[in-house]
Image (cartoon, rainbow, N blue to C red; front, side, top):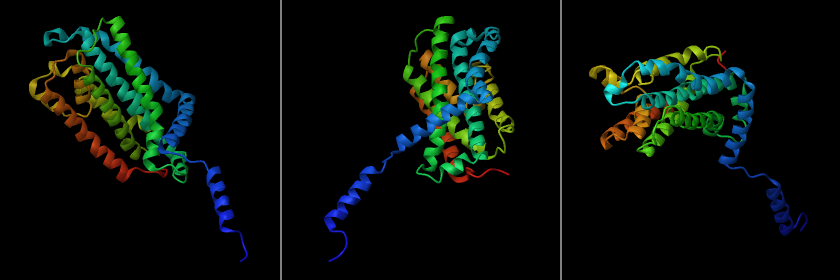
Length: 275
């Protein structure tokens, strides 16, 4: 019988398999995240939006908060400013920056080329988002440390609530960024398409004005906005005055915004340039 013996064939097959690089979803996303981090460092506009604006805006907001007499509602300046600062980090450092990144990578055909490899769609989006999410998390930690030192903010009474609020905000803003990138034609127009979410959240989610200072009916409506449960949970981490019902309600509102956003990304996200 001619040809390669069965034993030799098995040896050749095993050798080829041994020489083949085996990748996992984690390793693929980590490699993509490293490449994205390099690109993030080279983009000055995105770097300013993601890093510097969230740190500068809360400083400019401090005199306004001091004039609000938030103490009448049982809130100190630090308890108002710190959640607002974290909210700014989520809006500008994660949502706005990631919307521009997704749009830029799509228009440059980067996302389309990545889909031809081993990366799955969810891995591409998650890997591209990891550097921005890590930046948002690091900024939040810096803001907490700064507020503790400069504003004499005490240690959180219920830190698990602050962690829940921050993590839910990171996931929500990443999902919203992908949705916004779907309808954004260019990086320049991302400043326009992200404006509604940013403005509504700044005005109605307790960043500029705590909901406790608003009329009851208006506050009840504002509590249903996307970023409102995040700010509520983060602030509740320091005040410790949230009941179990209020915590569950805040998480339910956050999920009610996040899950449809994830579905919209899976259904309508555009991988080809909008030309």
